[in-house]
Length: 219
Image (cartoon, rainbow, N blue to C red; front, top):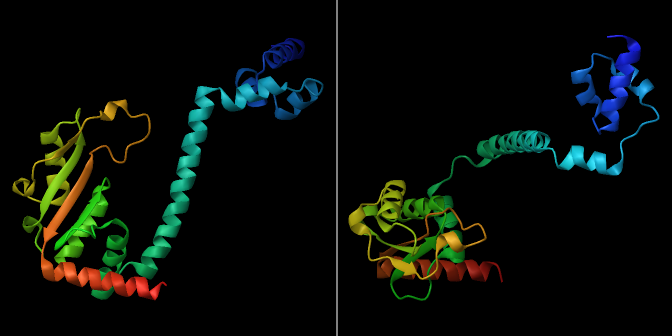
């Protein structure tokens, strides 16, 4: 292709809103040549916005790039945190559980130690925290709060396997009248709310006393 025809093609592509990189994929010319030929043909604001915001491939590539960057940054911090806090003493684990209970635990039901959450890992930690006091997973009671279009048997199996709690520990679920499919906002982790309960007066009194101590420390 002659230089004249190459330049005509380049100018035609530029008028259609093509970027330098897009043009170079179609016409074998250097970036400096493009800069020279197109020096008087900057893209309009609308053309730039189209390239930046409305090109599906560009959007997906940008998202993937940002995701990889975010994951890489998080991994660096994770390794630093792991080195510093990766091993916790029993005292530290007990305190961590108390702070979780302060924020998420049941406090008004007498002799009831319970945490409800949509995050399976929060409940898994709560169970491990109960293990610190000698409570076994088959000694707790579990109540699921679900929407009416959710399959209770499916969700019971999910929570039972994830938490390693026998299905025999699951009590009658609470079913909400609304539907999960009708919600327009993101709803937790998609498995409803799981309420893990343990009934023991001594542990209940220990937690109440510990939370009182924590409140006194922060007031």
